[in-house]
Image (cartoon, rainbow, N blue to C red; front, side, top):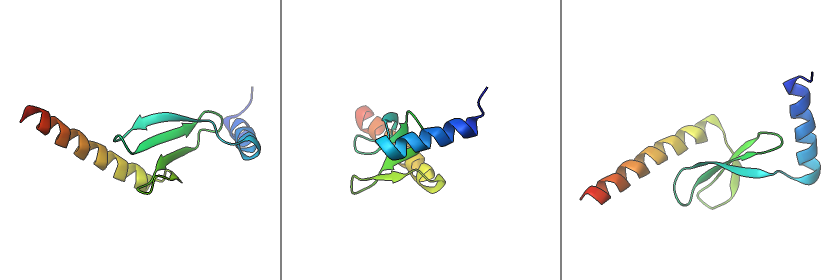
Length: 80
């Protein structure tokens, strides 16, 4: 049985050679999305400029706050 570290290292090596295979993991707003690599499980998110950036704990918190704000704003617009 392989450890998760060796699998992760192998996945990172594959991604460094062939590139990541991103899948959408969370839709924050229509313009901001979080992605996770299918092979090495690295997480990225779209920035304000539309580029991908590594998902840090700070960006995770920002995305969660933005998702809550977006959800509240659009739920109020449909009621009013």
